[in-house]
Image (cartoon, rainbow, N blue to C red; front, top):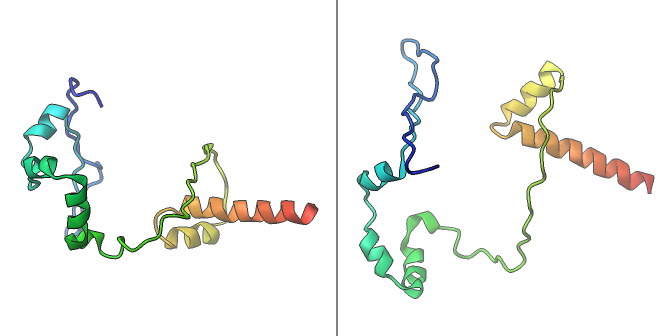
Amino acid sequence: MSSSRKETKAAASSRRTQHGEKKEPRIVSYTGEELERLPSRTDWARLRAMTEEEIEAAAPADPEWEGLLDIDWSEAVLVMPRRKEAISIRLDDDVLSYFKSLGSGYQTRINAVLRHFMEQSRAKRK
C-alpha cells in the first residue's frame, strides 16, 4: 500500500447485529504515516540496538516461542503454492456442510481430497 494514498476506515461488514449478538471487529486501513504515529508497546530503540545473538538468547524467555524452539527445520521442504483457478462447482448440501463444519479452510480441504483422488487414480493407471 502506498504511504501517500489515504485509505478510508470502514467497517468489516454492513450486516446489522441483533440484540444480544456480538459485534464483528472493525477492520481499518492505515497509511504508513498513520501507522508510525500509532502507540506501540514495543521498545523499538532497544530492539534495534540488540545483536542477533542477544535476540536468539532472549527468544526462549518469550512465551510466544514456547514449543517452537526445539523444532528441527533441517529437513524442511519449501512448498510453493500452486496457482488456483476460481470456478463454480455444485456440491451436495451435506458434503459442503461437512467440510464447512471442519472450520475455516474448507475449500483447501476439498482441494486436498480431490488432489488425493487424482494422484491415486494416476498411480493405478501406471
